[in-house]
Amino acid sequence: MAGARVDTVMARMRMLSHRARTTLRKSAVDYFRGDASDWLAFAGLLLTIPAIACGTMMLPVWFSPSALVLPIVAGGLLLRPASLLALYAASAAALIVEALVLGPYTQGPARVTPGTVLVVAACGFFGLVIAQFRSRVGVPWRRGGTMLFDLRERIRVQSKLPGLPRGWHREMALRPAGGQSFSGDFVVAARTNGGRTLEIVLTDVSGKGMEAGSRALLLSGAFGGLLGALPPHGFLPAANGYLLRQDWDEGFATSIHLVLDLETGDYELLSAGHLPALQLCAGTGRWEEKTGEGPLLGVYDGAEFTPARGNLRRGDVLMLFTDGLVETADREISEGIDRLTGEADRYVASGWDGAAWHLIEKVAKDVNDDRALLLIRRSP
Image (cartoon, rainbow, N blue to C red; front, side):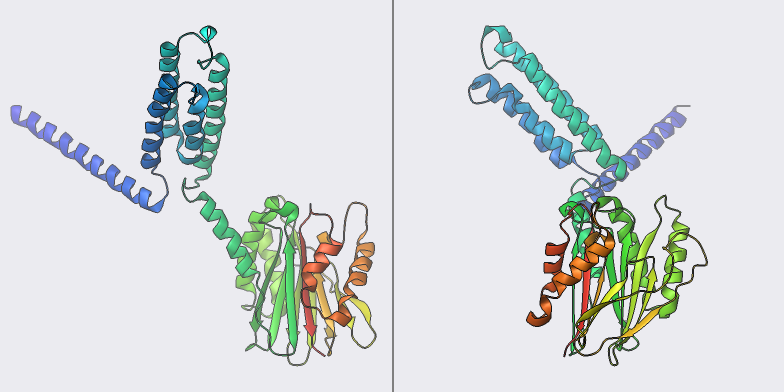
């Protein structure tokens, strides 16, 4: 019997030792990955609490009891909810000690008052809300900002236009709603057919700004994979099927697909409910609307898209844009297009360098909507 008990105790000790090693190893891996461990930040903030309390009791003129909100606010940004609650307990204990040492608040200034307690408690509440939100979405405590920055840069890289051969000029400008970093408008482009063909897709996802940013990121990756992997006429049907499979509440988007032959200047425009493109004919100096026929993406299966065809001659300009550039609450699309072409005429004589950026600044005054403009020019 005694031997059996010894074996049982040894087995339990080995199990506890294994769990301890596993926990320690996981904590170390999480720390170096930046995923979950916060013990270093927790230890640092925990040490500041007695330091602040000692300063308050020894030098009350320089250290206010409300200074305890500093580690509490920092903890809300850095710690997990469990660690944050331990930090709050230490802060509450420090307040109690300060109140006992300094005496009742009715006997003089620089004491722990009910207002001090309310301020510290309010900061603690909002810090806990922030920590719980980060924990729920699974954002690493040290890498959340880096992850969002990386997502934004990936969108920008995917929206870059490829270099064109001599005799062609291209530029693009994109402005998210409200000056944010994420937009519901995006561009994907590629040189196909051995570099002879330029394919560009300009898409406007339903919604704007941050509301549409996550869907735009997902679609830009999917559209970038489809572009060039399918024949030009197969791209929009495939994109439409992809949106239908997502089954989003706001699952529609408008898109325009340009297929341009860089040797002859011949092009096709396939549209999925998007605004028409505008072509400036150098011979006449007039702007012409070019648009294909097709429904919105993500509305119904089996949609067909009929292209519009044209040719870019020497000196011609082709302009693609989204509705945020020409449509506002007090202005119809036709009026916005007239204003856009009128402003664009100023660049015919002076050249088109930087024209996309300046046109958005001049024409699209409504900063509460996503705006995108793309210019393709064939040199004279």
